[in-house]
Image (cartoon, rainbow, N blue to C red; front, side, top):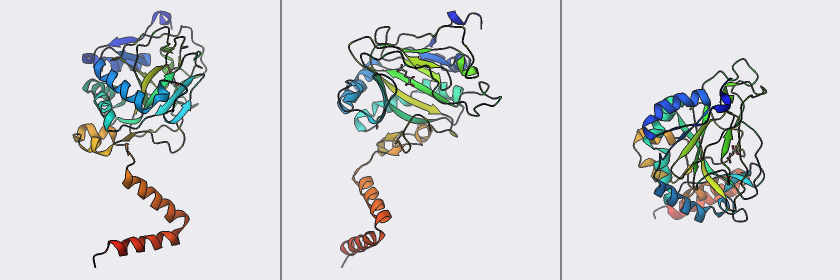
Amino acid sequence: MEGLEMAGIERFGAGQAAQAAEVLARDGVIAFDRIFDPGLISRIGQELRRQVPGAFDEAARQPEDYLSVGDHRINGLVPIGRRLSGVLDLLLDPALETFFVGALGEGWVYESFGVISSFPGATLQHLHSDDNFLFEGSEHDGQLPAFALTIAIPLVEVNDVNGGTEFLIGTHREKKQQSYPGTAVSSPMQPGDCMIWDFMIRHRGRPNTSTAARPMLYITACRSFWTDSVNFRPNAQKLVIQPDLVWSLPPEKRRRLKRFKPMPGLGTGLRSVSRAVNWYAPGLHQGLMKLLRRRGSPR
Ligand SMILES: O=C(O)CCC(=O)C(=O)O
C-alpha cells in the first residue's frame, strides 16, 4: 500500500481510452478531460433545468423516481426525450465505446440515466460502494473484474467549494472491512470532463459549501448479465428514451441502449389503462373491447 497517499485520480484524453480502461481496473476510478463539447453540456444543462428544476433548486419539482442520497443530496432518473437527444451523443461517444469495451467487455450496455445533485449545505456523504460484491462474502471479493461503472458528467464546474466526489483509490480490490492507510482523493472537473468509477470503489460526495447546486449527469453502464437492484425503487424506469431516437441509430450503437423503455406517449398510456382494467375488472374490459371492435368495424 506504500505510496497510496500520493496516488491521485489519473486523467486521460479522448485518444487514451484503452489505457484509461487499464488504469480503471487498477485504481477503480479515472477522469476524462474535455471528452465532450462544453457547448453541448451547457445546452443539456439548460434543458434539464427546464425539465427537472429540482436538480438545480432544492425547493423545486424533483426528478422522477428520485431518492435522497444524503443531507441535501438527491439522485433521480431523467427520461431522454427529443429535447434531450444530445444526451445520446454523450452516451454513444466513440472514446467511451472504446473505454467500456476495455473495462466491461464487448457486450456492455447502459443500465440507467439520471442526475445527481448536491445542494448548498450538503455535508460530507457517508463512505460507500455503489453495490455489494457479486459473490458477497466469498473468496472472490475484490478479485473480479468490474461488473458495473458509474459515469458522472458535471453540468457545472466542480471544485473544492461545491464539492466533488472523493475516492479511496484501489478499494474496489479490497475486502469490505479492511482498513485503508491512504487518504481520499478528489479531482476538479470542468463541463466537458467526466469521471468514471468501478461500482465497488469506496467513495463519497464532499460538502457543498457554495451557494448553488452541483448537478451532474449520473449514468450506469454494466456487463449484460447484471442489473441494478440496489440503487432505485423496485420497478423504477431506469432508462427511458423517445423510441424513434433509438430506432434511428445504427445497430452497433443501438445495442448499447437495448434496455431502454419507451417514453410514454398516448398509445403507451392507453395500453397501461387497458391492462389495468383487464386486470381488475376483466368483465368490463371485455365489454369495452367488444364495443370498440364494433365501432371500429366497417359496415
Ligand atoms: O455526489 C457525489 O459526489 C457522489 C454521490 C455518490 O457517490 C452517491 O450518491 O452514490
